[in-house]
Image 1: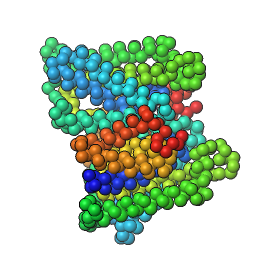
Image 2: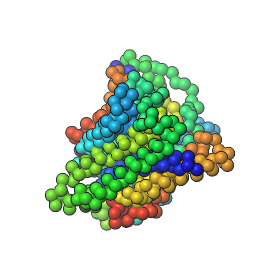
Image 3: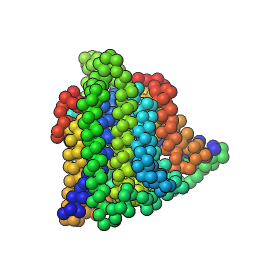
Image 4: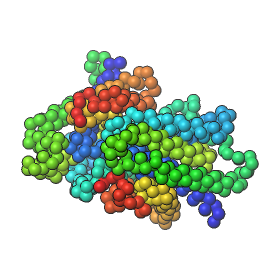
Length: 298
Length: 284
C-alpha cells in the first residue's frame, strides 16, 4: 500500500510540477507552448551531465533551470511580437530538434543508450531501500513550494498584469505595461519549472534517454492543465492525478483484454487524442476552471 | 553537389505541396493546423489500402486515396471544425483541437497497420543519368506531378469562382458573407483542396521513402518552415518556400550529419521570424 502511494506521489507529483509550469504560461499568460517537454529534457540532461562531471547536485539542478529559462525566453523573444501561433510552431519544433540533438550527440549524451549511474540527492545517507519513499517526500515538498510560489505570484501585481494581458493585451499596453516583457518572463519561469521537474524525473528513473522526452509528453501536460481548469493551480494538480488514474486504469484493463502491446498503447493514445478533442469541444474551462478566466472561446 | 540539389528538389516538391495545403488552411480557416502531417500519412495509407484491396492499378488507387482523404476532410469539418467555429471558439482552442486530431489519427493508423515501415506494391524503378545526377524515373514523375498540381492550384485560385470566393473569405469574412458567398461551402472546399494536396504529398513521400504512421508528423516542421518562409497564408510563397527548404536541407548533409537536416528548417524558420516575419512573399 505504501509502495503504491509512493509511486503515485512520484509520477503524479513530478508531472504536476511539470504541468504547473505550463499552467503559468498558458493559464495565466495565454501562451501556446507546444514544446514544454524540451525544457523538462534540458533540466534532466543538464543536471545529470553536470553531476556526472563532479558538480554538486544543487548547482547542477539550478544550471538546468537557468538554461531552460534562457531557452524559453529566447524562443519567446523570437516569436511573441507576432501572432500567437508562431510560438506554438517554434516551440514544437524546438522540442523535436532538441530530442534529435540528444539522440545524435553521442559523445556527450550516449544517444539512445541513455545515461545512468549518476548521483542522486542524499543517496548515501538514505540508502537504496527507502530511497523512493525519501524521493516521494522530496517531490511533494518541491510541488508544495512551486504551488505556493505560483499562488503568491498569481495574486501579486505581476500575476494580475499577466492575466490582464491574457484577457486584453491592448488595454494592458495602454496602461503602460510592457506586455512583451511580461510574456517573456512567464515563458522563462514556466520553462525553469519544467526543468526542475526534469531533474526530479531523472532522480526517480535513474536512467534517462532522449525517448523519455517525446512530443506527446507536452500534451499530457496540456491535458492536465485544461482538464483541471486553465489558470487554476489546484486544478492542474487534480488534472495530474486524473491522468495518472487514466494510465493506471488502462494498464490494469490491458490484463483483461487480449490486445497486442502496440494495439493497446495505440488505443490508449487514440483515447488521449479524443480526450483533448472532447475537452476543447465540450468543456474548455475544465473541471475547476472559470469560463471568464479562459483565453480561448469568448 | 548536383546530386544533393536534385534530391532537394524532389523532397522540396513534396514539402511544397504539403505547405500549400497548410498555408491555404491558415489563410482561410485562420489557424495553424497541427494535424496536417497526419493528413499526408492518411493519404499514403489510403493509397496503400486501395492498391492492395482493389485490382485497379496503382494510379487509380492514388486518385481514389486523394478523393477519400478530401472526403475525410469534409467529414472532419462537419464533426469538429464547424461546431468549433459556430460555438465562437477562437483559434487557440482550434489549434489545441488539431493536436488532438493529430494524436488520434496517428495512433489509429498504428493500431490498424502496425508501426512498421511499409512499401507501396511497385517494382523498383531504374536510375537514369541526367547531367551527372542519378535520378529514378519515379522521382522524375513525382516532380512532374507536383508541378502539375501546383499549376492546378494556381488556376484554381486565380481563375475559378471558388478561388475568388476563397480569397474574398480570407480578406474579409464578414464582407464575403454579406456579399452572398456561401461561407460553409467555401470552407468545405478549402478543406477538400488542402487535404487532397496533403494526400498527394503523402503518397509521393511514401513513394520516395516508405510508409509508417509517423511519416507525416516527422516532416511537420519543414512544412511549417516552408509556409512561414513563403509568408504564411500565401500559396505561391509556400511553393517557393518548400523548394528552398528542400534544397537547403539536402545541401546541409554535405557539411553536417544527415540526422540534423531537419534542424536546418528550424534555423531557417527562426531566422525568418526574427528578421522578416512576413516571409519572402509578404502576406498578412
